[in-house]
Structures are given as C-alpha cells and as structure tokens.
View 1 (cartoon, rainbow, N blue to C red):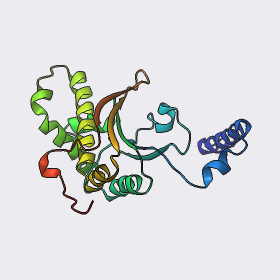
View 2 (cartoon, helix red, strand yellow; view 1 turned 180 degrees about the vertical axis):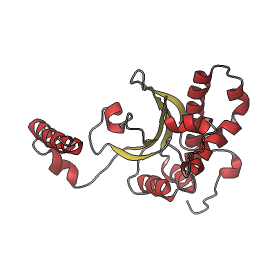
View 3 (cartoon, one colour; view 1 turned 45 degrees about the horizontal axis):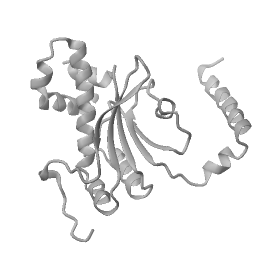
Length: 212
C-alpha cells in the first residue's frame, strides 16, 4: 500500500469512531468555531497540539511554524493572532516550544542552511540577548534546553508587544499569554511563562488608545 493511502484509511476509521460515540459530532462542529485557546507551536511532527493537550476539534485555534516564533514581520502569523484575538475572542494564547527542537539546534550552529538562515536568525538574536547566561552553561545539552526555554520566553513577550493584543487587554481584559514547553522525552507539558492582561512589556512597546 502506498503510504499516503494509510492516512485516508485512518480518516475513515476515525470518522466511524467519532460517530459511534456521538452521532451529531460533525454537524455540531461544522457550523462555527468558538475556541478559547490560540496555540502557536512548532511545525515538528512530534508535537501535535490537540494530541498533547487532549482536546477535541474546535477547542484550539492553531498556528505552527519552525521553532514556534512570533516574528513581527510575519503577516501569516500576525493575521492568525489578530483573527483569534479580535474575531474569535480567545481567552488564552499559548506559545509552546519543545525540547529537542531542530530549529533551535540549527540556530546554535554555524551551518549554512540557505533560506531558513533568515528565519533562524531570530533565534540567534535570542541567544545574543541572553549570551551571558547561556555562555555560562558548560554542558551543551543543558545550554540547548535553556535556549529552547528562552526562545519561548521571548515569543511570549513579542505577543505582549502587539497593539491589538494590548487593545484587547484594555477593552476586555483578555487574553492571558502562556509560555509552555513540551518534553518529547516524557510527554509532559510545563509552563515557564505567563503574562496576565495588562502586564505590559517594556514602556517603549506600549501603545496609547485614547478612544478605547
């Protein structure tokens, strides 16, 4: 059997399983979506958002890219976040990184990888910002894990710098922003950062909304 056909067969079995548990499953979820969570995760195939959080379709609005970055010139990501915040009215945004991230590993090296060098440079910038701490870690594996954590920490702050996130904070006291790490070795998630509505970033990034 060709490999892709297995996916189609799996889908048929999944549909039957869902219908056996709840005959109206697809009609109930096809009309609209009202997720409480936006998930910004890594494209890594080993970190499926719904699987690791145990949620049903319709509960997570998901954006994924290499190394779970929040880049202020990435209009794809910005469109997802703005839609989630302004239209879907999500209550939480989760940035989830993971130990063993290939993007972070590549950013720690001097290897020339072509176009993706431009993307990974954002992680190199994070290393530079935290170089004193990172360079003081003698064990390479521990330094790697710490950069993965610091990368998530920085992306959380990048979200807090967005004007439409700050406007939602001022008008509706949402969303809360979370930074999580998924451990491929154990399957567990852990929270390493949390920014409540109104806990603004550095003053230089704060916007005034006189009519809000």
